[in-house]
Image (cartoon, rainbow, N blue to C red; front, side, top):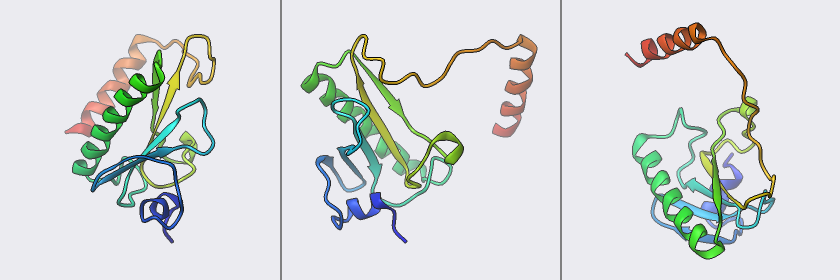
Length: 136
């Protein structure tokens, strides 16, 4: 069954569209974290960053930048959170690759994505080694 975002991309479900090209679509989030909260999707249905083809990932990233520049110009934002969740454990609820652009202003306290912690340098090296090995 198509995701809600696929249904928006095909026009089956209405959305307040901001930008569209052959591969991507940007539209307003109906449950915004802040004024101007925008979603950018790849029109083709791919569940997450692990499955999306690299050319479509690049196209989506280009649209993210284009919309980010428009948000800055139109709303005079002071900052921007770009959030992309993968998997339920990361908070993904629609399993269709998408990126949140959340405009920010000084003192808004809308989003605090994580609480910094400390880690031993040896642990950093051990984790880095495992990641490097997976890249080979």
